[in-house]
Length: 178
Image 1 (tube, rainbow, N blue to C red):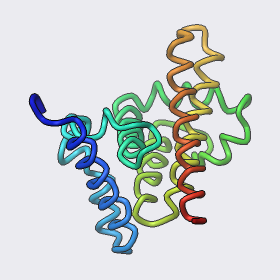
Image 2: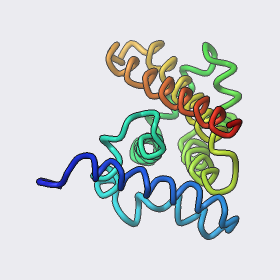
Image 3: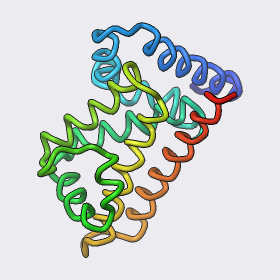
């Protein structure tokens, strides 16, 4: 996006995210939910990143970027993610329950969970979607912390993602109350 005004890019990203989230929920259509889940597959995560990746974590666009990035990562390394999730379940029991991953949490179960989370953008409360994704990231962070092969930086990145999604969920709830 070379010479494009960053403020205009940010405004366009926020507008697109708002239309996507609010419009998808108002449509109440399973086909819309499925298209939303497959957006990164059909358009490419790079196209989404170009628009949303520089958005603040607490913005709607920033939340969507993090959700799509989480889905892309789970689909790319479901076996590795399943191992990290399994390792974190015991020390993050509450988050494990909120994440809603089937037991035992294998690669297929994690792919199904992350797709269900994205489907939830169109079919359920957006704050719940954010809390569920945050819980998932928190369990993975705990799993990384328990693993001898994970760096402190990777643990902190996943924990930061969990905290960002959780804070955005709280913000979404506050906006609903206004």
